[in-house]
Length: 148
Ligand code: ADP
Image 1 (cartoon, rainbow, N blue to C red):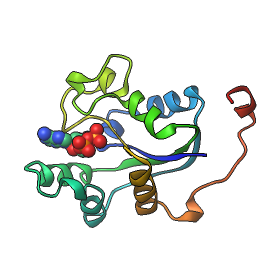
Image 2 (tube, rainbow, N blue to C red; image 1 turned 120 degrees about the vertical axis):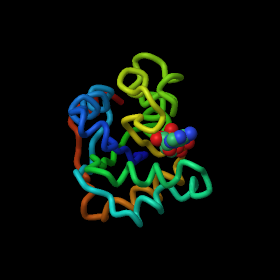
Image 3 (spheres, rainbow, N blue to C red; image 1 turned 90 degrees about the vertical axis):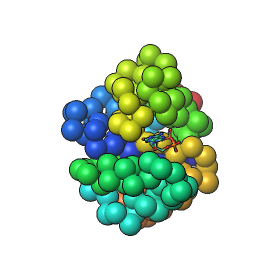
Image 4 (tube, rainbow, N blue to C red; image 1 turned 45 degrees about the vertical axis):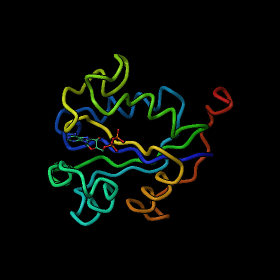
């Protein structure tokens, strides 16, 4: 089954939104296979956001994502990468539809609550960057027969 990397950013953790966000993906029918609260080391944050290295907001982005704990997760399910991106909403909360996580809880692009992999290649890269293989649980979700 497809896997994606999702992360409640420091603003979402501070605002007490971990439970709300986990619930949305559970209620959708996806399967949580890895999760941990962590403060991201600066060099991991720089690797994670490497594609934005030349952008003017890169320093601010790395400062922010390392400023407090994040809740890093791996979720599994059919088309989970694209579906999670739809559930997150657009990068700029002002453009994110109501009903999406960023649309419901975010105001500014810098503090937009959640990160999610945007492609199979980035999902693979980000899962490997944040999780050891032994931190990913392989388990049978009995409700799956009512979802698939
Ligand atoms: P997404 O998180 O939706 O995949 P991007 O990969 O384009 O979006 O950007 C990564 C993160 O960088 C965004 O989630 C946002 O927090 C931050 N960011 C993007 N654009 C800006 C900007 N213009 N100013 C400040 N932060 C930004």
